[in-house]
Image (cartoon, rainbow, N blue to C red; front, side, top):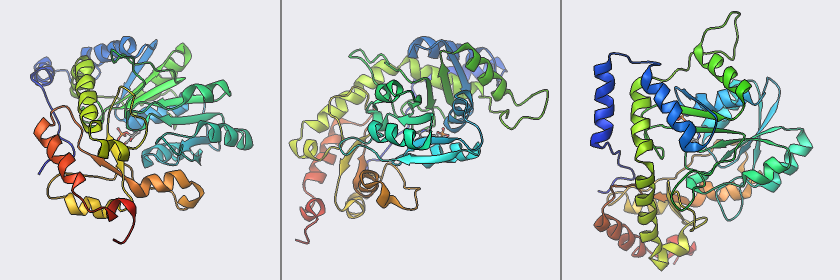
Length: 346
Ligand SMILES: Cc1ncc(COP(=O)(O)O)c(C=O)c1O
């Protein structure tokens, strides 16, 4: 059985963790400072703040963007429920926006229109599955964009990140693009936001403050994430090669969902009319999953997201997936009954 995801820890990762054990310093030490410094230069932002999870990174980014109780925040209707949970944790209102019909990303034009109607200033945009979202159009329309890079980011041909969100956040949860265990990151270019982020993560304030919770990271997670970031260009190159191998199959290329030409590949997602049946049929041979779970009551208002929740299936894609495993996956998929894909009853 080929798993959907396989966690990978290199010798360098293990050494980084052992160095923390030997240091005897497990929180807010030299490694966290080194991680933040590395992130500033790697991602090209002036300030980096590490926190305990991606959700807490989002929460702090929303606070830094000025979101307060009663404000509205735009969130893609096809996204992890963590996004809306975090918005609600601040007493703010979630305004879902549909995704584009041809990519898994937020429909920027719909977001701009809705923002004008409801007086919304802040939007969370995810580069879903690693495919770059249209951040610029929303910024040009005056929106503050929190770019969620947990799945990936726009990268140049050398795999250097090209990120333009007003604030950037990333989850380093175990199964994410650069997985540690539990860790989040917020990036900004604004010195005042930086001070606010540092104060909010500390958990200590002169007066009681609901925005100030202890969300500090630990040294093990920052050490692991730093080690993985240093290996990022090579890991991203391998992921892209694996995706290209899948795309060499014309059959799979036709069923791949979204853009084929981006550089960062977190997931390889295909569309299948009978997704549940496909998952059940092949589950003993290899892992297939629905990559995102629905959280909205009435999905009919968001037809592209509704279709994505129904038909998207993610197949294995990770750096140590072996060539013969990929060949098996392609062969087994192409041998599946036609009616799973056409919706006919045969
Ligand atoms: C795109 C995205 N952003 C943020 C999060 C939240 O990250 P974490 O699980 O580290 O809190 C998730 C969670 O899966 C996610 O998918």
